[in-house]
Length: 463
Image 1 (tube, rainbow, N blue to C red):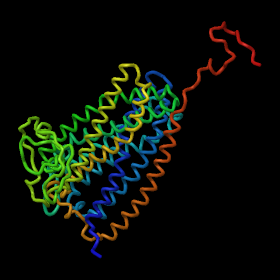
Image 2 (image 1 turned 90 degrees about the horizontal axis):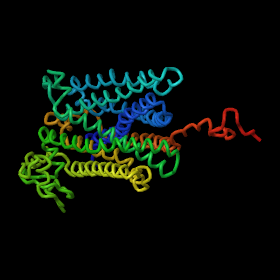
Image 3 (image 1 turned 135 degrees about the vertical axis):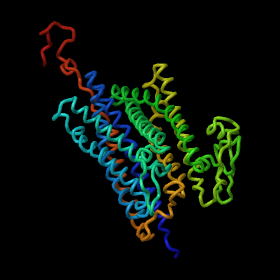
Image 4 (image 1 turned 30 degrees about the vertical axis):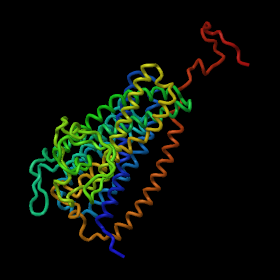
């Protein structure tokens, strides 16, 4: 029996655990912002409907936040067990960035999450709103530091390789490396967009079930307003991020496009089967000049090809190529849902159109799929490097780790995470099906003996 490849297994293990983990921050980052909005509307208007929405979605936030914390801790251990060489070489740069995330974001979230969840009867409404706001800020700060660290590995700046490891020359250059601004904006917008579609889907489910329609109408309307803004914004940010990637990681772009030869008037392949061994595509269905127009904004723009580098320096083309198309395809489905919502609102049928509600329910998990596809493009497209162009993945693995040990822990992760995710989905679906608490019945409706419009004191005696 051939020996088990420790590097491949370690990569699979980290890919699985980080893909599992990213699902939860994607929802909590966006949901925290919506909770701030709901509570602010309640404070400003005094309407009970906003309080009901807050108290419903904060339960889902708490459940998801807990899953994110538990699944995120595991990643840090893998840095030392499976990727010790990477940790040793990049530690002077990435160690402080991850430490800053703990010292700022995690402590802020942990400090005020308890007030946010359990402080309704213990603190005033303004202090409670402050706690919600600080937790939301904490989630954004967490994304800031984690994406800064990831972006530095994609576009390393501000550090010099000295005596076998990196030494920081300029912390501002490290933090605000060339790809960081666009990656941060793209990912945070993806989180809000994912959350928006989840809220729209859950609201549509209750509209179809005719359950708490007044609350469902309000939340569906808010989600569709947000979708109308976020869907086109995300497409714009994705385009700008792609142009940044073209400048700093051209082979990732070449893999995304399935472009083997550097050429002008490059087509955009809607469908193709990349064959990396033969360095060609099969069964191409393309838009003429499409890639040149998208990437260079000119039909004669020159698009880089994978043949510019040796085969061993090319990323796995098939995964990057199709993940990119999944991400983009879902993005345009979001745009379609948003446009349909605008049209239905204009016709006064936003919450009455059953087909729109069905489409919203169907699309509710799509944001998570798009997020995972985007991260496959980002991370697989960086290969064969952990630090792009400087440190190979093969040189980042722990020298003493064995394939058998990684395989064992990978199997254990699959079992444990499968159980955790099953439990999470079970409780999440219970919350979704139950929905928000019903609005309180007005006092006059609670007392049928009172005659509306009658003089004070004129009541019908109860039998």
